[in-house]
Image (tube, rainbow, N blue to C red; front, side):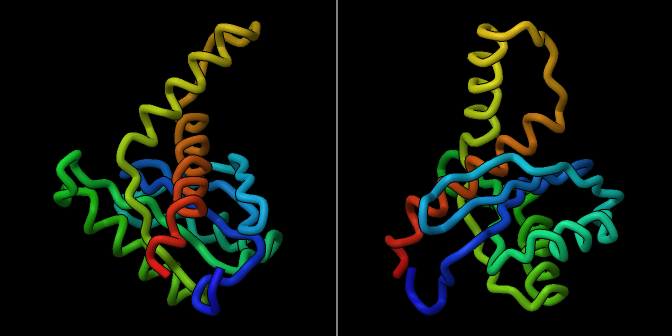
Length: 149
C-alpha cells in the first residue's frame, strides 16, 4: 500500500436502499470478515450504530462498493453509494475508496448456498448476504487496488 492507502484495518460496505452490509479486513493479509448490517432509512444510514462500530474498531480507511452494470455504466444506486462514500469520508475523516462491486451479491449468494449444503442451517437472511458481499467488496479492493497506484 502506498501513502494514500494506509495499512491496517479497513471497513468495507455493501450499500443498499434498506440495508448496508459492513465487513472488516486487514490490508496486510487481505483477510476480510463479515461484521454487521446497518439499516438505511430513506438514504440515511443508522449513524449511531455505525459510529459505535467505527469507535470500537477504529479502521484506517473505508471502501464502498459501487454498483455498476456489467458494461461498467452507472446504475440508479451508484450515485447514492457515491454519496455515502463522501459522507463517510467527511464524517470520520478517513481515506475513502470506491470499488466496482459487480457480481459480489451473486458471489455471496453462491457462497451461502455452498455453505448451507454442508451445514444444518437452511435459511439465510438478507443481512447475511449483505455482510458477505461487503467482505467480498473489500477483498476485491485489496486484490485490485495496486492497479491504481
